[in-house]
Image (cartoon, rainbow, N blue to C red; front, side, top):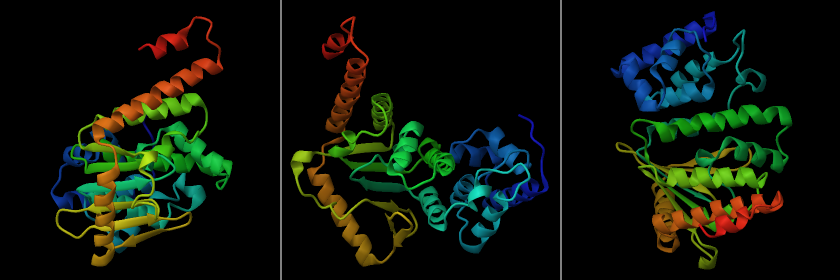
Length: 299
């Protein structure tokens, strides 16, 4: 698609190109590193393609740009004549921008979720129904939030992604979000991701009872050349912890979780069972004149 290069887009593209060149990376190298097609980055740098704040934060985070400089460049993403989804909401929250930056620089990410799939692992339909079901976001505000969540997931497809360990409680697999088909596709997606290199999913079984993660979901981001950062998310804001005491506490929690969680192989078996369960439920709900449910049970 050939889009007009507006003044704002050209200015943004110029700034992004300056940032990239300051790192010594070629356009192809940066595109490969963040998991993009080089033509997409080329069009953004030439002002011919809109760039959302999430996408800009991913690029800037990978180039180790932070603080005022990051704010200055990201601010150029809004106010375009053709607009992006960001215009109507005034930009992404500062805490999300900060999270994206930290994730882009991390060498390893450890996360715990107790009652939902981690945002980096959600399908588009699951994310949409999760927001809709909560009832806290107006309908017109759901699409831009879903898009932001999907854009963050490019982190998993990078040429050199961080190492991921996702802990999730077994109850996550049983909480119905949307239809059985949506849940079936989400379980398939988890099973696919669990087979990817550098991506480990470990299930906390219900029978394990109380565990070290009962304090709530969190994220630990580890770096090669700086101390780790812990992120705690609430409904309206995120808290980033950097003190040595806080970091040590969450490393201890992770160690305790590792002791009670199923292994990666055992967790894949649980996910496969969830895939089969939602598949059978879908068949049952729509009738089974040809005995398809029985056939699946025998697979």
